[in-house]
Length: 195
Figure 1 (tube, rainbow, N blue to C red):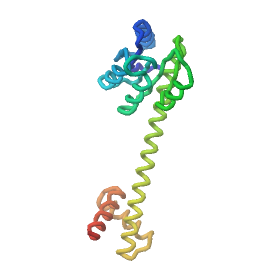
Figure 2: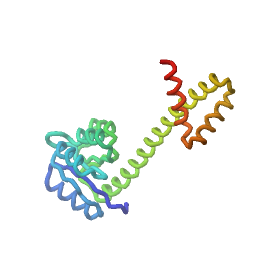
Figure 3: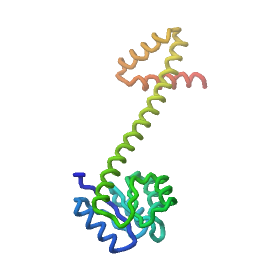
Figure 4: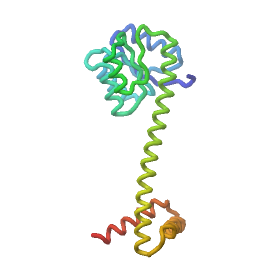
């Protein structure tokens, strides 16, 4: 990965925190937040808005997975979990929190580097899929409004479906507005007459 990332890290063992920070600097990344517990990590992520979070699981006050849940709810970020433990409970919780990588300590530089690359790529893919879902939902809502407006025109002007749609297109062109905006105007006007 050639792009330098702004990374927040959390680890309750000071030596491991320092080692992780040094390794990330060697990779060309900037550590913008260092936390000793999950609560501190959540607060620092609010303040620094990192590109990536790397956190230990077992920490005082709030564990890394609880912190991951709060961070995700406030502002989705790619998250990598570090743990000396790899039992199924932690893995299940990590999956639930949409953690993108789960690394077991002791870490190798190569596995960390690879996990960062994969986590960033997967996060971008998830963001793209989420945006596509939002766009599809909006297109469906727009289509419903256009169909409703078309029905109103068909009823009021006694036009065929095709002619009603052409009239919508003509109005859209004449008023230099999107088809869905014209449809909203027609539906809103019809709703006024029903009051």
